[in-house]
Structure formats: C-alpha cells, structure tokens
Length: 284
Image (cartoon, rainbow, N blue to C red):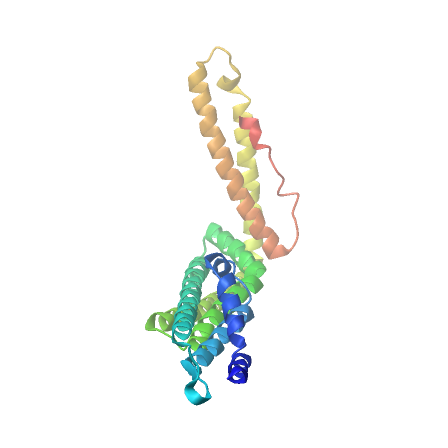
C-alpha cells in the first residue's frame, strides 16, 4: 500500500511546480509582463497549456490493492483546473488589450504620416511640412516596424497558443496591415515627389527663410523703437502691443524652424547664411 502511494506521488511530482507557480502568481506579475518579449508569453502559455492537459488527464482518485486505502484527488484537481484556467484567461485578456491599445496608437501615428504625405502640392509650406514629416518617418522607421511586428506577434500568440481568434482580432490585424502598407506606399511616393521637385524647392525655401529672417528683424526693430521706447506712453497699452508682437515673433520663428528643417532635409547641409537663432526673450 505504501509503495503504491509513493509511486503515485512520484508520477505526479509536477503538481508541486503548479502550486509554486500559482502561489507566486498575481496581478502584479501579469502587469509586469506588458511589453515583454513575446517568447516570455509563449513560454508561460505553453507551460499553462501543458499543466492543464496533465491535470485534466490525472485520475480523480487512487485506490490501493485490496481497497485498503482510497485517496481522493477530486478537490485538488478541480481547484487546479479552475486556477489554471483563470490564469490563462487573465493572460489572454491582457494580450488582447495590449494588442488593441498598441494597434490603435500605431495606426493613429501612421495615419498622421499618411495624411501629411498625401497633401503635397505647390504650396511650399505644405511641402516643408511633408519634408519634415518624411524625415521623421525615415528616422523612426525601424522603431515603427518593430512595433508593427510586436503587435503581429501578439495576435499570432492569441491565434496559435490560445486557439482563439475573434472577428475583432481579424479586423484589427487586417486594418493594421492595410495602414502599414498605405504608410509605406505614401512614404515612398512622397520621397519620389520631393526628390523630383528639389531643384525648384531649395531656392524657394531659401527665399522664404530670408523673408522670415527679415520679418524677425523688423519685429525686433519695431519693439525697440517708436512708442515702445517712449516713457510717456500708457503702460498697459504698450504691454498688450508687446505681447502681440511676441506672439507674432514666436509664430515666425516656428515657421522659420520648419522651413530650415525642410531645407536641411533636402540639402543635407546647414545653411547658416540663411538661418540663425534669435533670442525670443528680447520681446519679453
């Protein structure tokens, strides 16, 4: 009788691993897995699936020879099945939530890129914005691609390791792929268009930067002359006018920065003759 019990315990020693895991597992452990490598999820879910299969196949009781001893495993088996299933569902819920949030965020960013790439026209400011956005897209491309691949891995994890793939998951997967393809296409198109327009855009950018610089110089001269230097003027009125000048100054600086960024992107060089920084505190 004793050896039968010992054999049974040896054959089911893996149950102690499950209890150790369940004892250490909790909401914080699950939360800590957000953003972790997909292989971590795969290893965990594979272990859970294996344990669930083992628990499901284990006997509900042990009856020794001669019916001298009856060991019931029913309650333990039911408890383990319930806790393992609950843990698995919690992980699935988090993976689905993470894939949805990451997808929405990435698609929002890609949509913003595509929107700017699609409005290239003869307006130099639109071209400058597109050029700046294209530069951002090129700089962030590897990171964007990694985020795309991570989301796809999350969806693949749901499909292959949870045997669960809802219509929502499928729609999310298709939408993300469509947006990624649109982003790649529009990025390529924008790059080609900007390259073809480079010979006319660069002189125009130089002209606009020079005009913006002249406007800044004019604003500075205006702020340091005329009624602004007259102590007899009404103080509140002068302050309001200076605030308005400052806003105009800051808007012009922003536009100049945008134009300069586009110029650098087009030419690959800084043009210090046409661009230099102004101290915005001069109008304060």
